[in-house]
Amino acid sequence: MASDAMALSDRPARPLVAGRQWPAAIASGLLLTAVCAAGVAAYAYPFLLSSLPATTATPRAGDAPLVFGLVLTLALLLFVAELTRAGMNAKVVSLLAVVTVAAAALRVPALPAGATGFFFMVIVAGYVFGPRLGFLIGSGAMFISAFAVGGFGPWLPFQVFAAGWIGMTSGWLGAAIEKPLRGRRRTELWLLAAFAGLWGMLFGAITNLWFWPYVAQGDSVSWRPGMDLAEAVQHYWSFYLLTSAGWDAWRAIGNVALVLVAGRPALDLLRRYRDRFSVRID
Image (cartoon, rainbow, N blue to C red; front, side, top):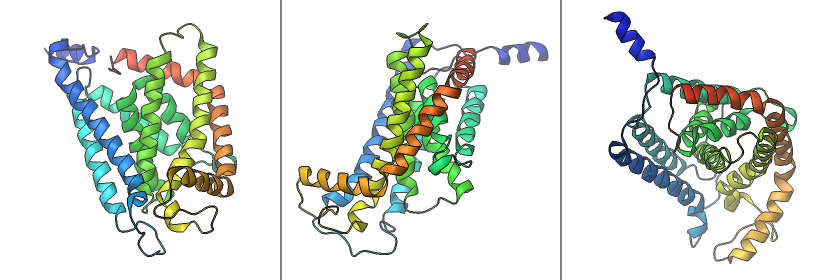
């Protein structure tokens, strides 16, 4: 009896019938939409104010804990919703935990100009496991890595959102091109590398927004309440070029290089485990 039970536990989890799956899928999709909407609202909040609070040494220190509590709560609910879906068993959860911790660990060894392997791992994992699990891997890895790099502060919840969006959009990319490009491995890898390079720039451009309205000084780079969208974009572009575009370019180059060098074995390994454990990525 014991040997039969062990044999059953080693079998890949089988998907449930569609009629029993759609409620969990809908709940998971709604939660992902909610957490993304919360992230957009958190970034947009300062731009909706008629006047900014007095500048402090640490911008957004007052509302950052609320933002962090919101993203943590919604991400945990999303994780619970994913657990109720077919194919999610202890082995799958263990695999995703290993991938998340690996991504977090890769944030510690720094490449030239501050580039890291963190983004490479989140992008590859999201590409293989899909948008919902990709979001959880990216956001979870960013949170865990904060313990290693001392990255706790009002910026953390905004970085968690952005890292989650990296994993989520990587999942969308995988859903769009993985099957059509089956057998065209080189083309797939180059597209993934270009995507990784794009996110190398976007991550900095997005995360700068959490503090830009509070700290930028100067007529051509600052934001003022009531500024129209075109002028705000122009001012932010000038601010971005002056402050972080150079660093982000190095991150983008590092992302592209890592995907081209290590992307193929990483994709093959993660796909092997995804297929073995029947992980659902829809």
